[in-house]
Image (cartoon, rainbow, N blue to C red):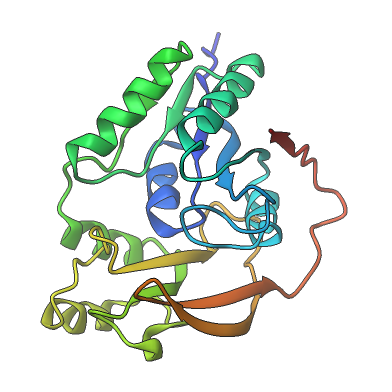
Amino acid sequence: MTQAKPRAAVSWSGGKDSCAALHRVRSEFDVVSMITMFDDGAGRSRSHGLRPEVVAAQADRLRMTQIVGRCSWETYDDAFHQALEEARARGITHVIFGDIMFDEHRQWAERQCEASGLTAIEPLWGKSTDSLFHDWVSSGAEAWIVTARAEFLDETWLGRTLRAELLPELVRLGVDPCGERGEYHTVVTNSPLFTRPLHLARAATVQRSGCWALDVAPLEAPHPESSLDPCFTP
């Protein structure tokens, strides 16, 4: 008899690191849900500033349900805890994170999960960001740059797809290959795990808080046969 895989959720920013973490462990876990934190009005994701319909379109293509928290930065921990409690109520036992470096990030994830009786999984932890960049490019996945810290990157970087030829230029500009110090963030537009690519329309470009940001929106509605069951935690 085949043993059932542990039921898991992924802490989902919408960007490449959470997706890369999912790539690495998908064969080991039954990943059924994604957890994403949004602002108080659920208008933008907290980490990457993505519209909810973009994250919903990603969930649709991954055939996952969503667990969505609404919070300010001050209430982030409490909202994430509530989301984990919802995950546990759905029979989830493990949560996958895309942390690579900075001990405080991993410790936070482990502490949050432990409080809800869950296990944090960190498949990218301690890996070389050069290697992770190359792994991402060679995996067949695709991601656009949607935020760029103006100190390092100008607005021309917005909307670029991560490809091998970008790496030398990132290194020259003093940018970590995976943007681990906040130099850039991405939105995943395709993955070997997606049922179909996510086509995005470019909207406004703005500069705020020292960063350039590109607003994007899906070009199509969620698939009519989607089994999504979004759960919004207050």
